[in-house]
Image (tube, rainbow, N blue to C red; front, side):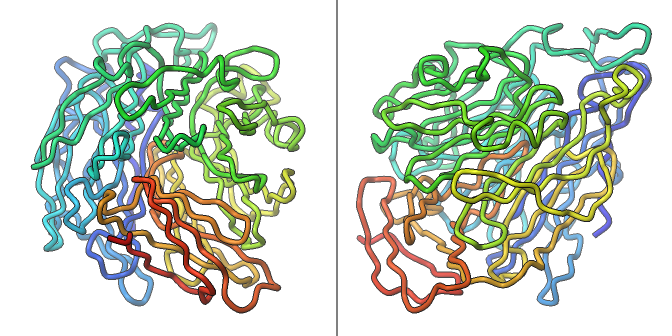
Length: 508
């Protein structure tokens, strides 16, 4: 695997240069092994002529798909899979989901100024079925079933009202990438799955398009327990958004009233990546948002009733991240002790930040924080400082320990194979029948822990859709598994054997 991200940095400091690109873990050929997909940037001239030619037909700027072999190695199958070239855009992020319920994972790739949807034909190749449905500058995207009709819909964040012909030079005395407040806000986009491979823009009629933001990360979760999946959007340099799903028909932005719009001192911050999970094992979904140095990563503890409390200080997260800049983030159990940990891709957005503030660093090593009883502590991670951006997680070798892939800006990805001490575990793969086939949105409980099936989250990324539980060293015998399916049906399995991947199909 020899992928290298091409961001094409220029003296013009086009903001595109410092924001990408995405990574996905997916089993595109259903052989039981996770494969890797990387989103590339594109060619930028210095200065860029208009209209731009991002040279996506040049192999240097292709996105890349790597199929995992039985021995754990990876082979480039980009061209054979029909994913070479692509639309004339500068690539950003990727979403994964089986939108037509045919049993094969499809891809949605975001970028500027158009996006593209790739349908997995089930024979090892993809075909373009929709290109340019969302215009402007799109960032993260994710599949979810907001109206519980059994088909995956698509949420797309859009970043700024920005055009390459209206680039602004910022910084004195050093030129730097501009802050987002130099550009206008834009609305996010919600595409409803109409079936038959067709999507319809329902942003205005559902209320998603009623507010404008500067969206980068997105994550899904039923935060208020009403059975409908809500949407959290990380905004850069302004308040964060929480779109409450009102019965699968409308969304209402409730970030401020829910307590997730600002930090504890009422300030906005540079929201980048999003992780949604139950970090304190109370059965309620909490939210982590990464941001820039001197802002502290934000942790919002779900208090129930649709209300959150800022918990970065009480959890120790604030002190551990005050001088760091985070992008992609995972809140998963990486040491299998039964508590959620945090893994963060890090780097400042400004490549010359040290010249402006000698106490900050552009390149940073990824961060691993181990959780336990609602607190986080730093773990040793032997890795060099890089310009980390997106992050995806999943069990690459199916050994019960979650692995991580971090994309780097203008560089090669980092693959972290989890070699930690073996503890007991259980991974649940849900398969919907009346629900969407991915089972996206299904809530799974094992031994006091709660997990939700979703490939979305982090930043520009898509991860393993299976739900993983660490059970600790002392687990023995069978465990009880409870699944609440998106349609409201509850399924209970008694005395399930551990240390394996279990496929659970939704009952008829």
